[in-house]
Image 1 (tube, one colour):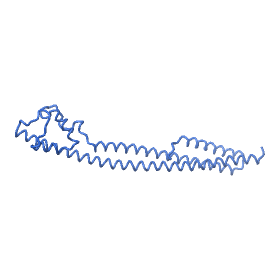
Image 2: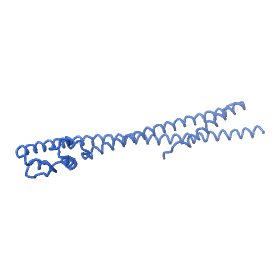
Image 3: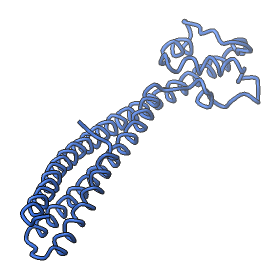
Image 4: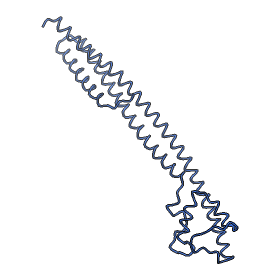
Length: 224
């Protein structure tokens, strides 16, 4: 093969390697930036969810305190009424008396708290020693704010995991861009080398690195 034809083919191969490496570097940089954006947004959302979870947990603590105080006040009032008149002692389901202090307090329990109190009263706690000590020990005692706080914490953990995954993917694309830079370097060295063997050596290195990068990029997840 004439030298001019060989050099022409060699220059074409090197130019193709450099063009593909340049495109690959640009794509890797673009994807790295996109995954960095996913990381930042996920961390920001996780932080917002944790802040909201903290507020929900604070609300749940306040509501729990209200329930404990109101239940204690009701129990004290009911006990005072029983001491004054033992006939009012409930042996079955409790029916609040609107004319009594205990009935007044009972009707003002928070709506979330009443199902637990009624379930507790159904166990006949005033005459049954095996009944739960308080309504707070029953599964019927549930606070929506508490559940929301837990859901927000779980969602924040998922977002934080997504952010860490996005960070790793961004780093992977950066590493691929670095390898593409070595393709450009080897291709440039091939054009500057004088000996045929040296040119072939650098061209082969550039080709191997280029193929490896292209295969790697094909396997990476894409964020648009």
